[in-house]
Amino acid sequence: MNEPADNRDTLREVQDRFIEVWSEISQLWGVNKSVGRVQALLYLSPEPLDIDSIAERLQISHGNTSTSIRDLIAWGVVRRVTRPGDRKTFFEAEQDPWTWFHTTIRERRRREVVPVMERLHEAAGFAEGAGKGAKGAERKRLEEAHDKIEKFADFAHEFVDLIDVFLAIGHGRMAKVFRTAAKLIPKDRG
Amino acid sequence: MNEPADNRDTLREVQDRFIEVWSEISQLWGVNKSVGRVQALLYLSPEPLDIDSIAERLQISHGNTSTSIRDLIAWGVVRRVTRPGDRKTFFEAEQDPWTWFHTTIRERRRREVVPVMERLHEAAGFAEGAGKGAKGAERKRLEEAHDKIEKFADFAHEFVDLIDVFLAIGHGRMAKVFRTAAKLIPKDRG
DNA sequence: CTGAACCGTCAGTCTAAACTGACAATACTG
DNA sequence: CAGTATTGTCAGTTTAGACTGACGGTTCAG
Image (cartoon, rainbow over all chains, first blue to last red; front, side):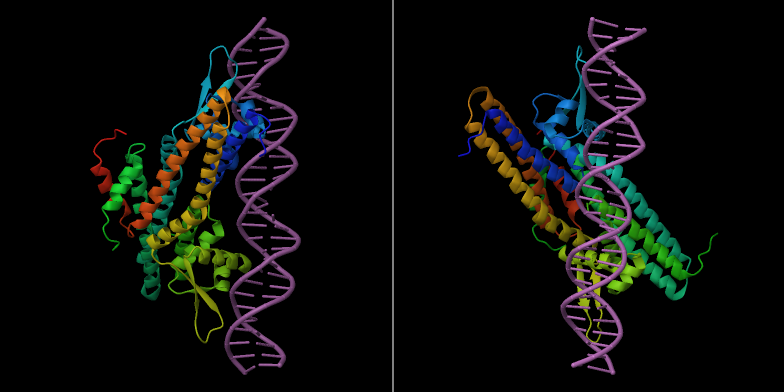
């Protein structure tokens, strides 16, 4: 029942449902909803789209659209396309989800993970220096704090190593590598 | 120069610097700042702390502290500790960063990844049904959309596999296992 | 049982971030 | 070169969600 009025509406609903899911995923990542929706629409679109078409399709302002696209271009997952003999600028999204994800991870590592790791090292260094400059019971407490911070830093390094392995592996081969990895662990003994 | 007034101030600054870094990391995750700060303080603390001590130490309201702790307990990374003969309730954080991370990933998979995957399947199913119900050029467009959604869903499944392998591996062995696995796959040929 | 200490909750307030829309800048046309 | 179509920017507004603080419930001491 509830036969759609025409097929255009159906296509629109198919797109909308997917766009909504993608925007939820984006938000889990900490990426803004509009950015996710624009990216999803461009991913689905067979040809590049211009700002006004996107704004109208998603019912958002063109200012918001322009800003979202600027972000997506900065993340390296959307490209600007100009056609000779056309005044408009068009935009197209990366069409391979694995490439998109790979690019995003690489950028986040560079922009977010590396800077926070530097601050973590600063904090660890400060704690170590403070411990060496103190005596008696106070020194003991400072050294305990330093040990915990180091423990956390060690963990963080393992995490960054994990990202690096991810980035070193070719596209679409992840599942296979991980399956192999899983087999390497006969027991869960730590 | 700038000798600290006393060692208590030094300990406090050591803690503050670390707490600030942890809260930044939390925010990258999409976790609220106060929650991250409370967790960091509890991680550093050699003994469990009560609500008011935490609130005073972090300069936040006790309501906020209570809510943050409720979240941390729900995530399974903080425990409630009661001592016989003491009216206060104390709280302590998981002390092993790998265990903390492992627990968090498991919970996020359950709460966030699984539901969004279900919605993705719904969207894919709807697209497939729509394609079958249409004819001619419109059918072609719907099938194109369905193909793209499936492509994305396949990628998402690979990603979930990745999480599952992660959860299957013992603490602290991730990077090493993956590096070994990656080496077993000699070429990047697809 | 009464009072004091403490935790949990939530309506209201506040804040940070997203979004809009008017204007500026740019690129193309004739 | 003037006119027009289009994108980029950002001050002001709106919105989502974090935070506060007053209140109610609970637990323990006396």
